[in-house]
Length: 327
Image (cartoon, rainbow, N blue to C red):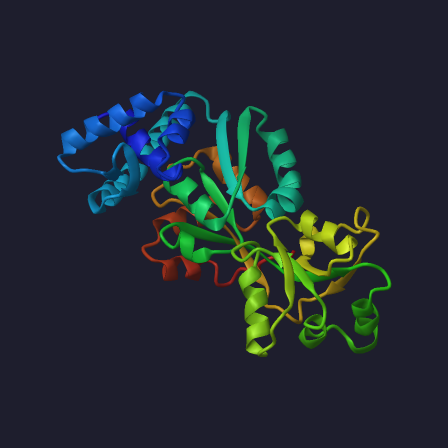
């Protein structure tokens, strides 16, 4: 059994069972991918994929179990490499992150700039994706950390370290009727529901808290457009399509001077940002440094204790007395 065979079956899952896309991702040929899969199937004695003619259409039950293990094996090989790099040079290497657009655009630039000054020989790779995509990346060992703000059920098998809380805001053009109404009577969910709403796609940046708030009051919001990107939401607010509900951190007073921001923390519960990682990780010194740069209370000792905790409840207890910053 060869690592390249495991890479092939994991890449097949990541590329929606498309052989040509898998071959491109692995910088090899389609016949080469098919050959590696067949050789592995012969060795383990079971079929990993269902086929219709020459086309692969689904994973078999055995294939699903074996690919899950293959993802963990490939992730473990990265840890082995990290140990070697640690002994060779503890201050150089690669840090691979997956996160949402909002974190990448509005939170991480300052963190990465400061971290880069301290560790100039660490190369940072930044990936963006949906919660499901990011969970797949970290399980496959493609990234070291996920910085997550939504879709926590996708990360239930990972160690989740609480970093901060954040609130929402409503953005409207100057002179908008909702802005005038909020100045008189305050902003309410009932008032919001009277206007077309532009906000995040479900699964991105706290959208579930927004839906939960309207549902609790049995109000049906008029959501006319959704996007994964706060900048896109603000663009359509400027065009007059509707009012925007975004993460407050995504409003920049100088750049967004042509919009008005209305506080909405009293309407929607705050959301949590986590750093997620696999259990039993072999972290390098610069990885601990990045985590604490992102969230000051996450010291190396706290991180090690969380990684060693036997359950999510034990991990939560470690941070019970931490007053998380609100962004």
